[in-house]
Amino acid sequence: MNVMLSWLSDAFLLVGGFLCITGGIGLLRMPDFFSRVHAAGVTETLAAPLLLFGLLLQMEWSLDMVKVLLILVFVLATNPTATHAMAKATLHGGTRPWVKGKNEGKAGEASSNP
Amino acid sequence: MMTVAIVAILVTMVLALIRTFLGPTEYDRMLAANSFGTKTVLLVALGGHALSWHSFLDVALLYAMVNFVGTIAVMRFFEYNNPQDETDKPESAA
Figure 1: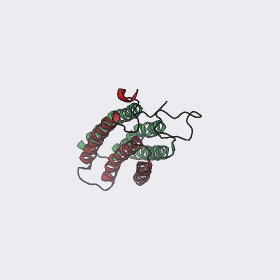
Figure 2: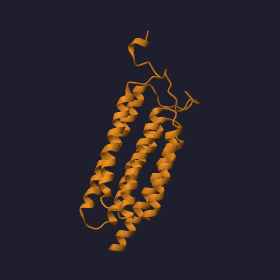
Figure 3: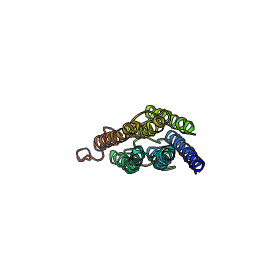
């Protein structure tokens, strides 16, 4: 049973770390803001729970497990909210999503006439 | 395997920092800073357990809350306050 839990925890941590790096690379290489929001937000909502579950499986029974679950719930609740707020603020600020062929070469810049 | 996860988080933090410095608009910088903050929460939670610190989870929980409130506050500030674009304001439409 303990070996099984250890293997499960290792798998969770491995997949979580992989998704973490995927989100970072997407954040660095995507062409404009909205695709960067996608790369950062989508991977973060899966990477953070996987890493925290991997941590949870390695801990002993104590109050700390409740705190890890609290962090998990909080991250899951606030991450999409912050991502949505950022995309909404960017749209209201005047930046339009990058469309292939339409405004090529101006990726990431604020285009004033969509 | 805990070490692998911590190294992955650190690499992601470096990538987010590069985007924070490069970012063409302020929104890109804020997105990368928010991502960096989330990764900090995970780093404190995992690294605190690996190094067996005391009460590391309180720090991680508090950091998650401060990160969220800071992101929302900065985004509310930027939302209708962009000096690069004046199309939303009625006085510049004429």
